[in-house]
Length: 370
View: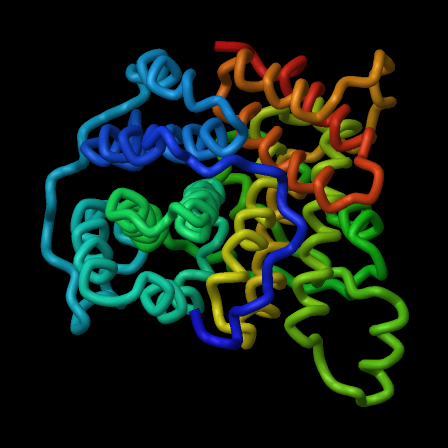
């Protein structure tokens, strides 16, 4: 990792190094499977098992995969190899899922994985909403696993290849979207997101109905400075903005999850995936990542968000790790991944974040357990 990417780590949720080898075993088991099932639904297993292992639930991983096995399908058959000459025409072609996975597997075998990521990040970023944001989320889990002290293993590099291959094959961009003025806080930004009138159908149909989204929220002090001509967002400011976006989206789930308990999880987990990836990227790419992360989160809010929030359910305080343990026992992949993101938010807050913990519990209340 070069000097531009040093010192980028934020306060992350307390995780444990995998001394058992469980994560690598699980990834090797899962890499015979494709990234989707039933045509286009995402295979969440690699993301969920990484979160389980990180938070001390390694002993439950293989049992969890066994319970998830009906959602695992074989990797699709290859079509035509992706090459340096034809990758542009292959981008966004789901028939090339296996071809893209093979391409990135060779790339991370032949080059440092950080270099592969840095090269492809600006190419893939415009398609961040593809696959209901699951490709970037899977990439975030893969990068976090690689950045741990025990992370430089072949199964984890291969997992990054699978994630990037999925992203490339499902790559699609939002078009015809008017960018509205930026609000001065993430909370205000979410309130300003125009909800689509027709919230029916799958996410691809819903995303196509978006006509306008606010730009990434910018604190008032910086807005004034930028108007005075002091320049654009520097990398650290972009990262700080993104941290606030993830915090606001996570806390908002506690009051707005009833709109779509499963899909609104991604309003928080997608931008948090980008936040996890930033330390592995050159700092020059951070601002674009923050912009794209906000756009993805705002888009999910626009197509699934309810018109009004509800009060946070009252109850006795629960320690964050106990709330995560409840999500693990609950078993649903979305509840697990959301609890993982909430732990990041709680870890970065002085004195914890009771609303983020309440959001974790809300997910296990509203999402059907396994």
